[in-house]
Picture: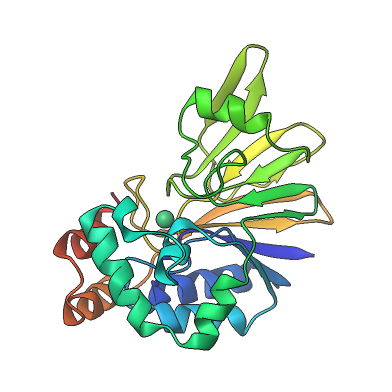
Length: 243
Ligand code: ZN
């Protein structure tokens, strides 16, 4: 079984399509695992939800997903994110909202615990510090954890007295044995690590390997739609710089 792992697609249809095409050009994909924040920020929430629904998938909800269906208060978001979530809510059909509303906050798939933020707080906590990573390792029982939310790809392993983050190298198969690891595949629709290309991972259960890939997509097309829908300029501009 090969799973295409996507996180933080954020209503970016061009990026999501490019990721699926790129992954399938490498090898067949059996399922898409979405780590949350399918919607919010971008111009195509309904189309992105439809695309995921049309494929075999496993999906959990993120903070933006919950806000877009009224399950989280917009007051918890910065003004740009809140404005985009308000707009997103108006674009989704009832069926699409029900789909998002039916998603769990945590799943266990093939030795992975899957959450959006962290295993301690799946909705809000960012795993970006050693402290958060150490706490995270205490809050899941599987060998591995997949998470998103920060939009920064990384691998994190426990050490004798803490945890250590390393870059998730590109186009390299990482063998997963029984050692514990937290993996962030980066963001499909709004990368924030300085590389504007869409970021994703592929897990192969037979070889027990995971690989990180980046793919360029039509950023101007996404930006043009965002401007047309009067989404905040700051959100439009950041796509081109990946910050
Ligand atoms: Zn996000």
